[in-house]
Length: 246
Ligand SMILES: Cc1cc2nc3c(=O)[nH]c(=O)nc-3n(C[C@H](O)[C@H](O)[C@H](O)COP(=O)(O)OP(=O)(O)OC[C@H]3O[C@@H](n4cnc5c(N)ncnc54)[C@H](O)[C@@H]3O)c2cc1C
Image 1 (tube, rainbow, N blue to C red):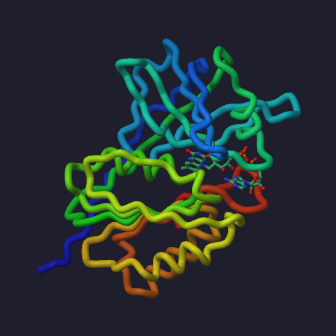
Image 2: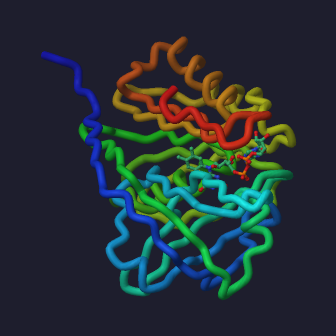
Image 3: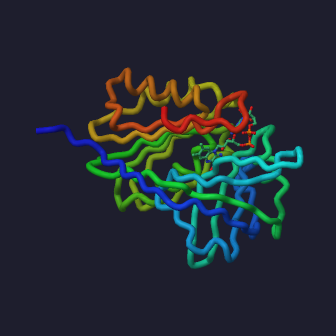
């Protein structure tokens, strides 16, 4: 008998650019800013996967336009709202734009261009990441079926950055506090204490070096690569960089 494996289905969509408006702004924690976008052009928006991403078009500070990847944290077609959570850091056009965004400001997005849906004989989930992955992690936890076992292990700056995630899944939330987001040691130490029974799907997204270290720790423990997905959501010291398939 062949070992069960998860099924990853890739979907492709026609890329559409949308001119939206900032409808609401909320500091959900000291370092996490939530913007709610909306407008007539949001009609037809689709984001089936919890780790989908949109492109956000923002001024590059030199008269041009920059684009950065963000997770559709929530989409409500009835209300016509798209929620995006920004992990605030020191520099970068997307972060600068979000910090300064006011209700009524224009906001332009593109995509999602596609989605990867992870399904199949998954008995439990382990979701690991940093602040930039928290929107995708929280969304997946919220979308899991009733009673599905899921553990999240998220590195944040301190207790004030921990978010309450409401879900019908059986969720265990683990938090690691650290100041340097390129320091993987806290996450690695916590991961070493987590059991990895068969059919555990592990999803990772963080700074690329941190995500690689976590991925390596899992493969060293013999966790099958078919049962893990890792991405570098940003690369320390490099603007506009990610490593989406580690
Ligand atoms: C698929 C995907 C989904 C993502 N979803 C989200 C999301 O929902 N929310 C979110 O906040 N981010 C998300 N990110 C990460 C986000 O795209 C990057 O953090 C991006 O670099 C931010 O753009 P910027 O203009 O602020 O900084 P950039 O101009 O890209 O970078 C400027 C400098 O800041 C550094 N930097 C970038 N991000 C961080 C950070 N978080 N902390 C410290 N230093 C940083 C860079 O290394 C560079 O030195 C996602 C990334 C991917 C690939």
